[in-house]
Length: 308
Image (cartoon, rainbow, N blue to C red; front, side):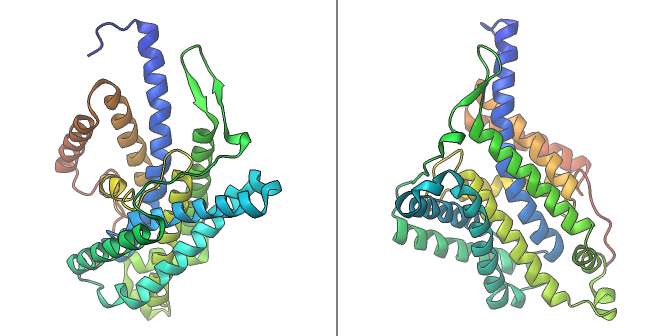
């Protein structure tokens, strides 16, 4: 597999693929954080999570076009506005979906899988009707163009670095919200013992709705970040949903730190192997390794102890 490469070339290849893996890690960790919050807290298998990501991507696309047409002088900062808008739109839609559908299906995980899968098909067809079947992309501001030259063979794209900064910032914000705020304490109380939490006056229904909305909002941010490194189509979310579930299960469904570690390991493994093997073979080998580890540790890399 390494025949024909000098040691310096191999080091440059691993460096480039490692950075490409970090860009993939950024999308994975944003998607997986939202999914881990929903699945870990509520036990809901949200198959429409990828479509919420694409909603955030299309929101960014429309925001880009609006600024380009009506506010060209502020185009350089449109992405910051798009992130906020993507989060709010996805969070509001998530709260509406929870109220209309998900709240009737708690403790029935297979039913939530079927219902959200149907929702994902509806959302895909809606995107296809509005935006067409072709993929669309956003125009990057000038300050996001170009790359930092590390060596003669290794370049770090500025837009990829920006996506990583977004992912790390959101990870820190989610950590502070979940582990350093009163609302996060209520969420963790409901996760560990729902009946006792309700007995001491915590509104578990409100916590569930806000949690689902938060997870969908983070998926929207993932979609906004995704536009920086790829084009957007009606079914683009389906390419990430399986990997996202894999990240969540492998890291531990209720562990934020485990999710981040899992996203990093899987993204780096896939990115590095894809250079030497086909993309499908890289996914197969990554999946086999993850399945082997889960056979030895079914609860994932890091798991939260939950009272039932």
